Length: 71
Image 1 (spheres, rainbow, N blue to C red):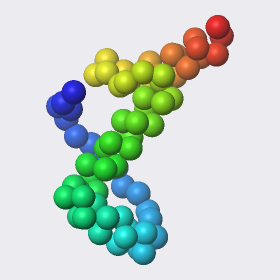
Image 2: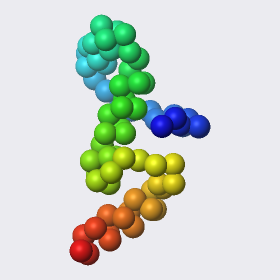
Image 3: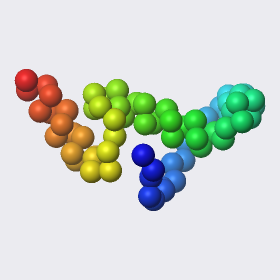
């Protein structure tokens, strides 16, 4: 599934972890951004119990979690 728009996410990380992360990404011929996007998609899928879709929003995800806990 392609993503149409992008938004910036700024994080703070230990410089040594960043350097190692970048080196490991380079060894796999991938970018740190690609790896982080993959990790975020996996996290969302685990939390929602299904893959992300473009219709999902922050409010919709919260409603889905509430409905899931009421069952």
